[in-house]
Image (tube, rainbow, N blue to C red; front, top):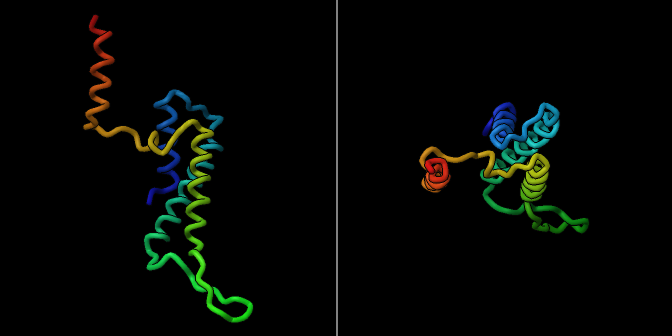
Length: 118
């Protein structure tokens, strides 16, 4: 799992690549990074589960199966991440960046270079 500092740096880097970074965005960056960390923790919790439910006792003392709370936590955290990144005009894809050997990215660069050669 990434550290909070690493996540903040990835967000800052994505903003700078888009030309949208401003020092005034630091609070929003912290909010997005914290939400992303909560999302990662919820994912780790889900990964360790053996079943999707927990047992609760009703008032009458009967066993009732209910969804594990980690599922709600994941849904809440993922929505918070989506909103925080949208506020910064980012997506999860923009945080991951492009790979070095991306054929589509290479094609786009070549097509863009055609106009420069003329």
